[in-house]
Image (tube, rainbow, N blue to C red):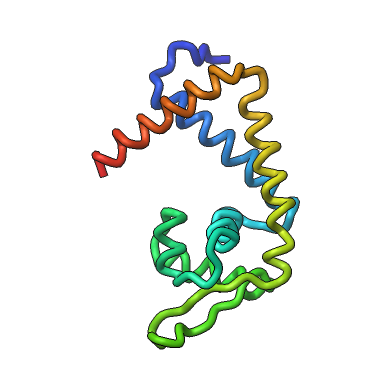
Amino acid sequence: MEDIGSWPAVRLLMKAMKLHRGNTHAKLEGLGLYRGQAAILSALWNEEGIAQTEIAVRTWVSPATMTHALQRMEQVGLIERRRDAEDQRRSRVYLTDVGRALEAPVNRAWADIEGEMLDGFSSEEETLLRQFLMRMIALMEKCV
């Protein structure tokens, strides 16, 4: 097995993200959700009735990807889309009872994932990690 201690930070981050993505996918798939759907639901749990373009911005995906994801979620009864009363060109997205019922299980899954990811970290280490990640995000946002 390769010694990851010699890897550059970017490679370590990529490996951590890949493992995190796989773990998250496995846990959320157990709730009947596919990649990205929990993030969309989370945006709606925070503010229901927002435009699908706004959900795309909040979840960092393209409008075309969002359209496809919402179609799939609508087909399985998680959300419903309605035309904006003031602007018929816009769609607003609302949760169904099924979508609302997933809030607690999804939040539990995310808490479990974070607990597994940070198992053995002290509270000071968790705080440092968060600070480092926020700094990295701020630096990378300048590059985009």
